[in-house]
Image (cartoon, rainbow, N blue to C red; front, side):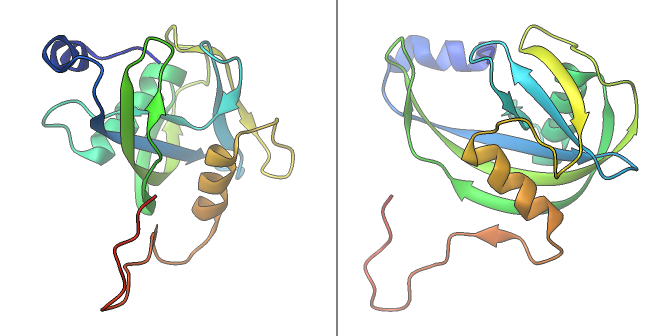
Length: 166
């Protein structure tokens, strides 16, 4: 994943301490019900498309931008399917980040799926019953995007319960 310039500027003053960052994931389906995936250049693994929101950018705009930047596919967000605070991640350089992810179900509206930047080695459409090996993160988001239920989020503790930590 390419580090945005605004994150580099924050890191210059904050060092490697934990940064809470707004992450967006886009689960994009075409008219045939296939899901759009990219194979990351940093890990070589297939995954859902996503990235970090830019300052002042609405999360749905981030989804549209990231999908186009990485795959050359145009899409329209249809609904929020999941909101989740992820576990902190420590990168090889020592930087620590924690992402608050908002996952959108999106519908492809045009473009041809292809590698469109340096973040992906390959991109492609996959039948949901014939996905390449995926991390639980992407599988979980695809599963939620296929459901017609309400947006998923971690339940709030009941009155009197201690706050959940994780």
